[in-house]
Image (cartoon, rainbow, N blue to C red):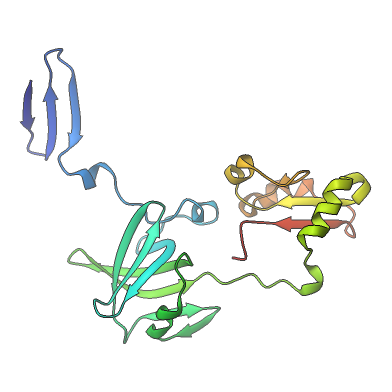
Length: 204
């Protein structure tokens, strides 16, 4: 067995069977870290200088923010004097980062210099505001589902991404994810007074 390092930094493995295996010398090259979580990909695309994931922690001593993107961890530096933190549409000071809960969905805009990412903006995904009279309880949904769409005169729409719907959904629900709304709006009832119930993966 012969192991040879090529100038490009690639390792080529020659075995007795003549099989050649090529692999990057650097594991980081073999698998680049994602910049956007899988869930975010349903509505957004990766963009230069932007990270989308879940807030993990903040350290003011080292001036760093840690976020999770799928199974990867990303650490971004920040300047408390210049960073903008947008929460519920309002721009706040760096101190607002201390109040963020772990797992909160965030978007980080950054610049990169000398291999170090420095955040200029942290935008927190806000909760969706729904009027109280437009909300239904779990018990009310259960009663309707027990009757079925025809007797209950309703349409139950799962607005989550297709893969989540396939993993499991509420009985009688149809799937109309937000990105596919225009393509699937024909599935909605023509009667504009019909009861349409939407549910998704959470308040954001």
